[in-house]
Image 1: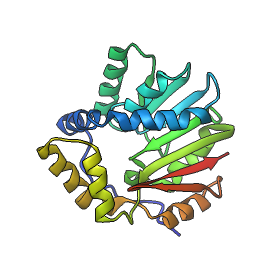
Image 2: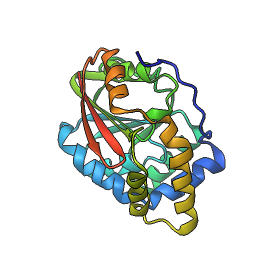
Image 3: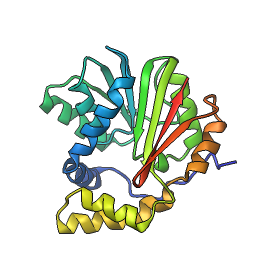
Length: 220
């Protein structure tokens, strides 16, 4: 059994930390474009989509450009919600960014066709409850995808990932340090993900491994 409560030991994503993260990850915007292109085929036309912990909202923005979807973003960080709303307004896109907790979402049962969580699941204090909430808010036959870092990623995997982000020297150092000293310690192994899913109404999942990360596919 995987612990259903996990203390979060990372930096609070508020204020200047949130602003730095938003500016740094904007330089890797192509990653969000590629992910939107990869997932769009799994979303029904005019479908309702929820991104959990969208941060600055870059994935939501890229997905909104690909179709007439009803997109919602839910983040626990007030700063990120403000940044994401500002980004959507500047892009002329209608996306509903809200503040809230992944383990207790403020949505009715069966609200969304598709949910997505990227690079944030490892930080959730109640990961199993968060997966249960994904199940609850999905419509029948809806799909949830969790994309995150692997706890067993090698130093070589991390180095390729950081180099691929094409950052300046200072931010490259900061991102590499974050991978080594924070993200890797919080990340789950593939077996741990399967064990957590087994404790939820989903029961089972498919996991695709790529680079330093994985995609966990869940269907209601």
